[in-house]
Length: 388
Image 1 (tube, rainbow, N blue to C red):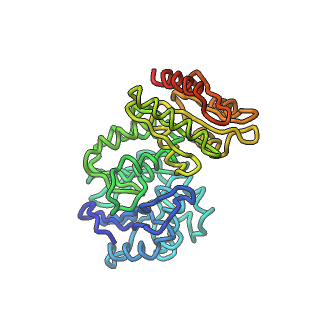
Image 2 (image 1 turned 45 degrees about the vertical axis):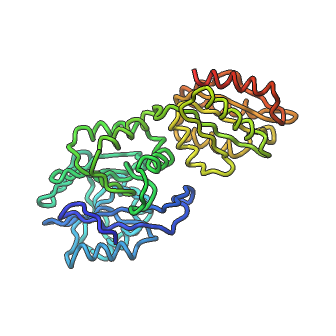
Image 3 (image 1 turned 90 degrees about the vertical axis):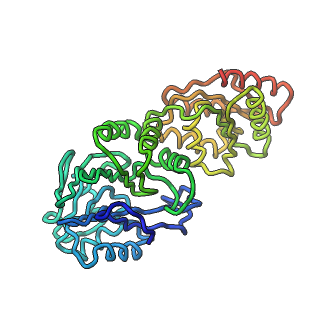
């Protein structure tokens, strides 16, 4: 187990998963993922969530070592998603007197995952502001519904001023991964939590009233320094604001001709002084990173070949994913390509029209198979408009 210091009486008992290739069976995690769990040792002992089945035995060993022969009194269930809840049934069976602490909706959903003996007698249902007294440590419960499941709650430990933040403030990557927090936390946020900006804003208002010294998420590093940095990032992300001045070009090209157009546009934008231009080949690059970049930058070019009178599927998948994640407030340029009946721009506009505050700039560019000199003139016009 990685030796991670929380405090003298609050122990880390989670595990790194370095062998997983897809988180939630869809997101690439080249540096793995951590499943975080904690135990508070006091007059009463509380286990703060369990972890994924992939690391069950390691977690149980960590728990036994931390308990050192003691018996836990409570299992706090912050979130019922299986990467955090898989071992609830096992713990409930191993410790028949342990109390299970969760929200009303926790106990609505719990029987869908586990058959727990005498659940009604063992459950402790909490609501906003309730406090669980463990002795020196006191857990105040904060409802965080739809960040990102309905039953989610967080816990604020009043004595040592620790926020157990469930999936909020989490990131991809194991705890021993040496990398900046922002990038993989951003990719994690927009792909998993991003739809629920309104709910995150409500949480941040509650958090602003707390004196927080440490944030303990269910994935990613324990945060102890520069907490304002992480909170400010969440504020920008959950307001769907532009984080960085730049242009993101998302390209879905069948035979490479559309991609050549995008390479030329990138060159033009850079010549005109664009601070940063990021070009993504949607057929080959991680779609979750394309979602991240679509939110990170304020100016986006969507370029797609026409396919079966529709949009080449990698672009369609991106746009539908963005729609599902509440994409909004961006300036957009469109490029389509087709040999006999270019139609992808219309189809892209149809999807974008269902999103909030999307400004589509002119000219919308149509390429007939390959780029010509006249197309470069239009690309120059589009670059001027997108940079305004």
